[in-house]
Every structure is written in C-alpha cells, then in structure tokens.
Length: 305
Image (tube, rainbow, N blue to C red; front, side, top):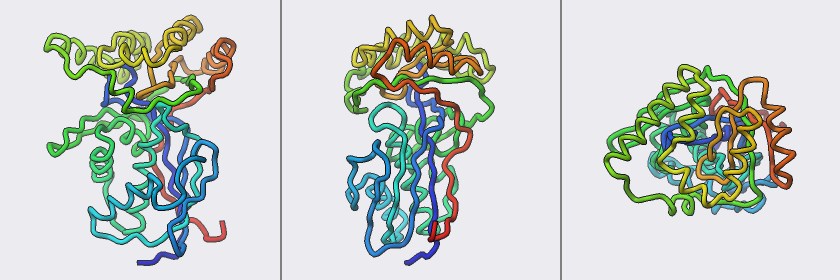
C-alpha cells in the first residue's frame, strides 16, 4: 500500500495515579508528542527536539516497534514513511512519554492501514502494550480518565473533561525507569490494607468529580498503593511536598512512576506556586502545566508543509 497525503499526529502527555488512583487514574497535560508523517522509500525518524535526541532513527524506534506489532495484529502492511518527531515530554520522568508513543503508533497504523478503529479499540490495544489505562487513556481521550484494564476480561474507562485547577511540575535532573519504580512495590497487600487503600481511592475519585479540592489533597496524602515506597527513590519528594503545601498547593503527588512531582493548586494560583517552588529548587525544571482537554488528534497536511 502507498499513500500520498502527509498527516500529523499530536498526542498529549499525562500524569498518572494522582496519589491513590494507582494504575487507574490519568490526567492529560499540555506537553505533546507530535509526528509529521510523509511518504518515503524507507522508514526514517527525524528527531527534532532534545528530549528524544537519543532515540533510534530507524525501525528500532519505539514508535515503529509498536506500530509493527499493531500492523501484524490487523494483517496490514506499513508503507515506508519519513516521520518528523517533535516532543517536549521528558523521557523516563513520569509524564507518560512511552504511553504517548504507544498512542501515536496506534494512530499511525490506524491511518496508514485505514483501519477505522474506535477509541475503545485503540484503548484496548494500548492497554495490552502498557498494561494499564491511566496514561494511555489520558493521551487518547484528554482530560481525566478513570479506568480498569483486566486483560482478556476487558477494559472500561470513564472520561471527565470539566475539571479546573492549576498544576506545577518539579522535574528532577535524573531519570527513573518505570521498571525500577515498580521493583520497590510490595507484591501483595493484606485484605484489610487493600480495603483501606481502595476506599481512599474511591473517595479520591468522588472528590475529583465533586471538585472538592481539599479532599483531593487529603486523599493524595493517604495513598497506600505506591507513594511511600517510591518516595525513597525520589529524595526531594518530602521537601517538594512541604514547600508546595506551604505555598498553597492543595495536593502533591508523584507523577506516574516519578521522579517528577506534580503539585496542584486552585485555578489562577499556578504562576505564584511555580515562582515559590523555583526559588527553592534551583537546578530542577519547575514548570506550570495545564489540563489538556483534547486527546490524540490526526490532521491532514500538505506535502509542502
């Protein structure tokens, strides 16, 4: 198969867990992975930003690897493409870089193969690769997602788009691989602890849906699933938490697997929170981010763009 119409795929970054919503809650944020795809004689990835400078430029590229697997599932051929890749999502920092790449790869095959997949089909595919719906769901749908992926038993997801608060991320100058962040987690919880942990998560979801900011922050702090274990891998977490709360943040959480820490504050207070955190955490990326309400998007391009 050949194609003669260039196109662009734009996928938002995401923060996952939000404290107690482990492997279930995700929120899209306004950092983006963008692919500009055009016909070529061979597969080539042209890397345009520093964040992805060390990723492969041939068919070893992660996006191609996922795309090839999706193409195999649907028995379709991938015509060779030149893909200009732009990303301001830092790798291995807890902002869903791999999930955005997975969604981008699925969108790529969907367009090249004219598969006309539904969002539910895209979600199920993405969860099979990622293992859980929080980051991939947020990148696919935008806004807040609350999901459950149970392998062959199915995937269910609720999408919420009317949240409103400001966020500031503190990004340490080191990577933390997801597999390392998972290796410190317990293999099981007691029945009693599991009930307590899930009740905290349930209240967290209810607080998000009713916009009870104080309760959101309280439930973030009470998480029993992962933060206490992963905080040991992020030496700055406790001090970021303390400074952010003192500066008016209603909630603080490890973003995904970390090491990024995300701080939540009322709408209109993000700039001041960023300023307060920047004073203390020199040498860190301290940036205001916002909720991205739009999920992955594909647009046609002129070949001359």
